[in-house]
Image (tube, rainbow, N blue to C red; front, side):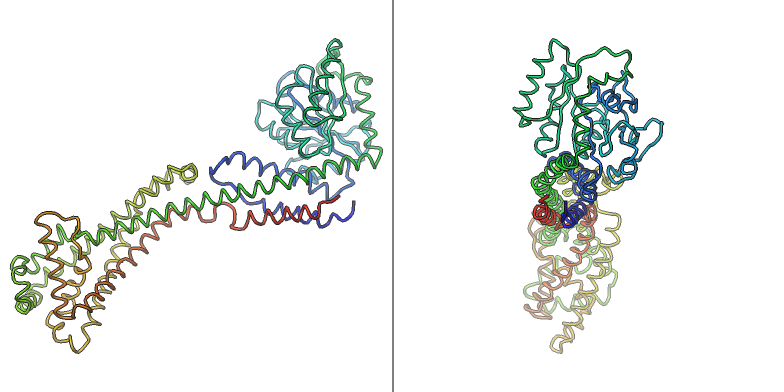
Length: 571
């Protein structure tokens, strides 16, 4: 076969795009997605890439089937030597054994095929997870037999390895018995062989003489009904053997041996087997890869939803902070008490509308004569804002964790993150408190700069100077919290009066339009600083997602690559 260089390059590109962990989280039927990915990687590594790279390499026939079907006995009988170890304990084949003619052994002892299985040579018994290589002179050159673990083994690793080995085969020798031929597990594999056009022969073993004809007829019917009509079918009679390790008589397996020898001796026949299986495997990519790409899109959408959930939680946290600025609750408690110490709210409220000038004189006296209340008010306001930030961040963290726990992918992510990390995510981080304190202090400095800049205007210099930058800055900070929604009873008058008083004094000095601008700028600056804090808090969640799963263009790349494989896939 010529012209396969482009096809090989396209398959290598496909394999490259399958390298990352495409399905890290429990999104959809992730177990099936991971299994499909593993099978696709395995067939590329174990069969498609090595076979295309060496199209004339020896034919590999994998002997597979159910537990106790006599696979190892059949292999020993076909090669005329006891190269595998059949036994009464199940599972019998713990490690696969590959038997080749000595002339072909170098091909199989290398890692050209099944590169993930370490090789064991010589007379030693293969350990689980290895591939034992044996040689037999009676086996014709150009053909190797691989005794695979049971497809229905009680050991999961054995079942998975059996499936992997069958996917690496040029030819399946599927072994069943008169008692097990109708079982569902073997037929699920046979249907896979049909779907992928894998070259196949079925061997019915242990067929009692009285049941041989009806069982053979029924098995032929089942093959035909499952789209496998015309599959070579060999029948081995039930024979009494002197021991479990004994081989079948040569005449019992001669039809199988003759058929295999014909395949290995005739280059055209051997090439036809390879072409059929290779073409079927390549054709299967046209459905398997796009389906995998769809699942990649689904995985990415699930990860994006986790990110969106965390973002929405902190957007809600920001909304809670905004509400805290509007509802007047910040002006209760300590802030209210310090304000009353600061100016004496009752007298001022009575004088507010008619005696603004007198009020300004009194406030000036307070500011110049009693600096301690001003500091206490500023500290109380600072503490109140920090508490609001903390409460809003705690609420956002709690919402984010609860939302993730309600999603399978979120639960999976939190479980994999470990108790130490996930246990801390439900509350604000330890870094929030010092970060909030620094942000509020910086905001207060920004407010003072606003007042200083506005007070530099010659029209307001004298009036601003009579109060001082610090005092006017405090009034502007209070004016940021202007709404009284959520406060009931007498507190409406008290807290509302606090903000009204602050605003009236500022308007008397700077004018109403300037005060609106100053207040808006101060409010937006505070929100920006709090948003930055929340972004850092949110990053505790999104950092668990960053770099997780497939890249943005993975699904598109997979579809492009499989299209290139289809365009170059004519053999």
